[in-house]
Image (cartoon, rainbow, N blue to C red):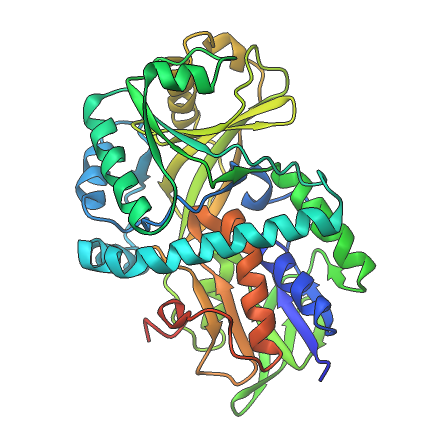
Length: 418
């Protein structure tokens, strides 16, 4: 039975929900607070599709590492001190989730989700227009400058292979043979051939274009201020421009989801993890494969003829100001790992930032809410929004269609902190 599905949020997750819901014959309206396309972390991220990322953000050692990094203004992680009860509550939940047992439970689910999403990307690439999103299936390199870092990555590679994710540990010479077009100052690394990369802006444009042709209505500049409910059902989304009624509602509002969700009695703890990126339009060297500079936690992605460097996890609230010191940390990492690059290569390159929606246990909130019979939540993907966007959209479209989800996603329940 065809329904009218109202999606709150036009990021990669919201547009993926719209895409799959429209494919199932539903009428879809998407509401977004931005003035138009091009804003937010869906456009400025590293564009990686990563089955290799099966370890959630809340992992053993992350709390200690984060505390150590906090004292370095150029470090990959920073928490702006502020007296907020919700930040303290999020931090306690993050600390409790950062243990080996939780990671062991989460890893198989995350690996299945990423691999399913990769298949979705291949289908999207073939259906929308081959090459339209810049999908490149060259894998991912985890580049290590230290023996300690390489040992840690080799241990993760062993876990990956146990999850049927191919992974090969390489020395510096083998990496140079795999990437002959750029010199790297590394001890070794790990190659994950199943991973891919794409150009985020091209992906978003392709999704918007397809949705428009499918009759999806996207309303920009539409800020949600509340909801009208009757018993266990939502009857309308209230915005500054009026009400929008539907049969099903999907909350995909990124870092704003927690605030919007509170209007519906939802408890979905969320912190904004600010990340920065710098895109060189004509780099002096262009790698063939996307990479992560492991000790620096910087992502490197070739996007056509351009090259993007992105990194940092800054918990500073909903704040899109640019911290030049943290951007400098990304530049210094780039020139350490790729010595042919200089600081001058980044002169005049404007930094961008995006606010990643981070749950305290490192897992997104995906599924039907027990509070309302016609509400689904699809948010909290942190650094995995691009990679998990399509499979999230597919799963939510199944749910609003009254189908059993094609994967067991009970661990992603939006009710898990109630």
